Length: 333
Picture 1 (tube, rainbow, N blue to C red):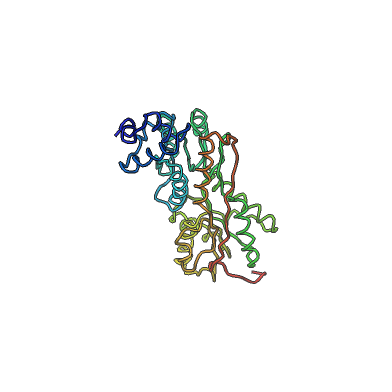
Picture 2 (cartoon, rainbow, N blue to C red):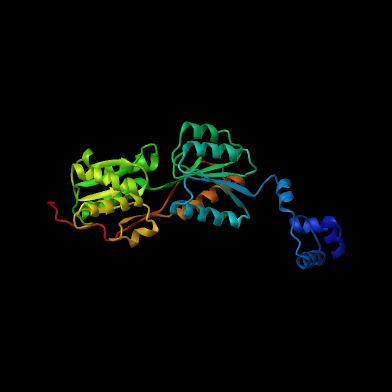
């Protein structure tokens, strides 16, 4: 059914139907009611593709995620989807499986598609990222990393790690180990490690290289890095930069005949769903990943609508979740 058919049934001109549908121009109340009645009765829906082309919009945004199977990505996508749905937008999702080359390819691919904007949850930001991003003709918002010249939604890594170290020190710990990730990931690899070092210094505790191990994001790596630390020196506590690393560390500690937290306390960051069901339940930092998705989408739509073109850094709130994986020890331990 076309607009002229609606007009014939309502007894008005096609121009009147168009004004009613587009909500512009004056239409007498009785004519508006007649048109709306016919639209309801016949279940008419305008051709969204034609409508979007007329408005020079596709009503699609591109979203690039590092690993769609992770809980973090799922929660971020939930937030993006909620805001997109409110705007009658669909998502075109690209899963890069933690491959930098795939992130670059995804940016180039989406830039050639009819998307109105792009959100990228980046594993790291390279010169290649910047080169492609600066060629985009649509808005771009970044989640989890800083990208010069673009709005970034960031997690409060520095403050969160400081809070964890403060909690461990208040519990009497002085020998605090650290399990991190490759510094190519600036926010998780660099910022969280630097925060750990700064927090130790704040409490006048020495930084010991033998208590530090660096791997990847997997549970297996958490296990391996914990084993590496135990071969050198036993800490009283370990701060892992993700919950998955903490889970691996806990299993390694148990497999070495030790107990958590009786022998070694463990903390993580992220608060995955499994964290509170571990034995013992994991002390960690809860990041509001869904909120980060909502903020990213809201900022993107502001730029699409040209309501706010200012590039900025927005930090997402967090909450320290204190559970049973940290033991209070004597101050002289």
